[in-house]
Image (cartoon, rainbow, N blue to C red):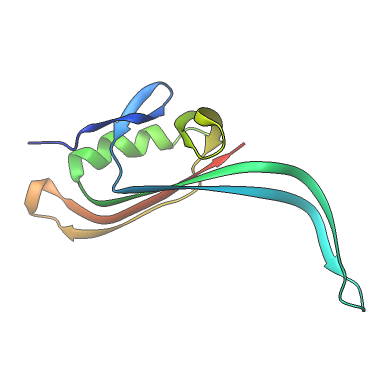
Length: 123
């Protein structure tokens, strides 16, 4: 069975993953607290700035492709290499807390999954 091509950009623990249909990078702040006073002024305690969240989407994956990809995302933490808008090619230590997909067919390709999505969030 023909598998998707492997990416030259995206790698987990140094091993290429299938080329995603789309990937996006979010650069976020982590706060210990944020609240507004009675006059509407925001007061926030920023714990860390520039935390990356990389979101991946695949239009479709076969059961075989899913069985290769999901275990790579399952460790508590792993190294992800990706293209960052600010840093260029970058590697971060991250985790993947959830993975979602819709079963399109249990017959074709031994299982055919649509709309596969997951986020890799920097440690």
